[in-house]
Each structure stands twice: as C-alpha cells, then as structure tokens.
Image 1 (spheres, rainbow, N blue to C red):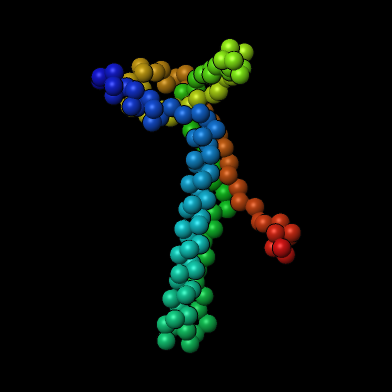
Image 2 (image 1 turned 135 degrees about the vertical axis):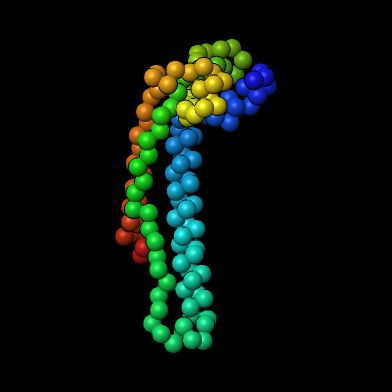
Length: 135
C-alpha cells in the first residue's frame, strides 16, 4: 500500500475519541428524528385521506429507548503544542485518539489486535423536563 493511501486511511479512521462518541450520539438523534418525521408524515397522510380520516387511526410512533455501544479500538495519545501569544511553546495538551479495528487499519499499521481497548458506552433517552414542556 502506498504511503499516500496510508495517510488517507489515517485521516478517515483515526479521530479524537470524543469526536467518535459524539458522532455516534448525533447519528442516534438523527435516526430518532427521521422516525418521528415519518410518524408525523404518516399522521398527516391519514388525516388528509378521505377514507382513512373517517376512522380513529393514529400513526405508529417508534422510540429508541437506549443504545449500547461496544467498540474495539486502538487508542493513542497525541500531544498538541500549546503556545503563548508570542509563539513560544508553553506546554503540550494531550488528546486521546482512537481508531476502530478493522482489516484496513490492522493491515496498514500492522496492529496487534490483542492490544485493543474496548470502549463501552450507553446512550439513554430521557424525557424532557417539566419546565421545557410548560415554556
């Protein structure tokens, strides 16, 4: 594999751990919004249909109550220079980066799967607070 291909794979796969978990959360939210939009569109279609609107038909609503996530990742600590206003290096800020283990990553970086870290996360939906409902 060429060095250029290796750089592209690294740019796509290796990200700060916070970004990876955030993207999973955003994807779950987008999925829930799409399901809600589908239910709303279905209800509107029922109400605008001459035959269906005569019956007490309600659209079905689907809900994602929780998502358990378990990722096998290669974790690395990278440091970014922290500079003052004059450009002088004051220190280094650590940032945890992660890459999902898959064939491309394993082959490109010759990574030993036995050294993988397991990241577990649970995303749970919660009802809105009473204040938000009444506002």
